[in-house]
Amino acid sequence: MTDWNAMTDAEFRKEVRQFFEAEYPEELRHLPHRPKFAEIEHWHRKLHAKGWVAPAWPAEFGGMGLNAAKLLIFYEEQQRWGVNRGRDMGVQMVGPLIIKFGTQEQKDYWLPRILSCEDIWCQGYSEPGAGSDLANLRTRAEIDGDDFVINGQKIWTTMAHDATHIFMLVRTDPDAPKKQQGISFLLAPMDQPGVEVRTITTLSGETEFCEVFFDNARTPRENLVGELNKGWTMAKALLSFERIFIGSPSLAQNALGQLESFARGRGAFDDPVFRDRFAQAALDVEDHAALYARFADQLKRGETLGADVSMLKIWVTECFQRITELMIEAAGPDGGSIGPLQVGNVSVDVLASFYKARPTTIYGGSNEIQRNILSKAVLGLPG
Image (tube, rainbow, N blue to C red; front, top):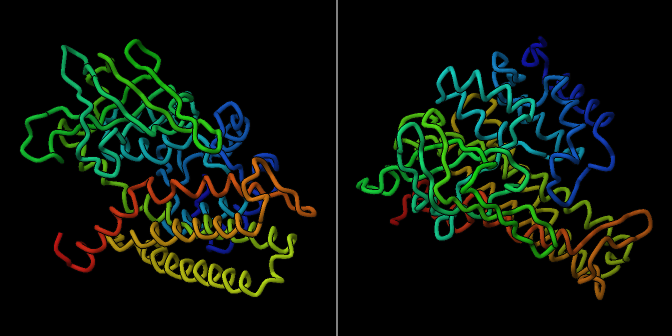
């Protein structure tokens, strides 16, 4: 097996960049939607054969074993070439939790199936009335013999209609004195009586999100990961890395590149007001990239990220929204048109980009919640 961490960063970046540039299908680059597994299965099989499905996992579990510096390079090159995240809930979220908290039997059974995508996962966290305030979740799981019996509802469950399994936070002790207590982490099959999935159609006409209803659905007790009633601790285990991943500058950088190409084709740079607004957006993107680099350096030094990493998510998502709003303005009367707009050799779906930017300030913990975290944990302001 290759020791990727023994390479210099420059050598590793070159190898990863060459592979994505040469091998990732052109028709899948920078997709405006999350594809179903059937659309990207051939790409996943190629990654699986190369051993690149799980770059962050230890090599002993089938991953690449990348350190923090190499992992950031890997994701930066994915984003550079528009490599779609695909069906990575298993790799990014449930797999690391099983590695850290699971039994040996759970690791032996579930991890190979995650890598091969024999099992495709969705995340059951958010609920009506308990999205960013996840500790208020109400979905219940009660022990009945050798099973947990699950009742409740999840919402905004990404690609649940394309998943075989769900990992979820459920309330197993409704009488716990604090709302963060009494929550457990369960794995459950989707294809069973008592599980109903309803797709949610977004403004752009996509159906990435779903509602999931549980009516006496069941899962074996051995599908409890970690300790009973200790799921809140597990839910926070990967939070810092998720924040830096969500806060990557590529989201705004890609949008700024699209805006520049589109605006030049439309002659928008002839307007001095537009030039000023574009320059401000470009400076915001550069400022964010510098902030991201600071946190990336912390990871490379092996340091734990603090609560201030929430700044990344706030900055990049709000910058992304401003760029897409400027793109709508640059399109003029065509700004409300559905579908790609052609300008020379450039095709840009300005409305789809605008729609894509709307929920970014909500998912992964709303920006209002992130500001509260910064005010309390970083600035020491009263709650």
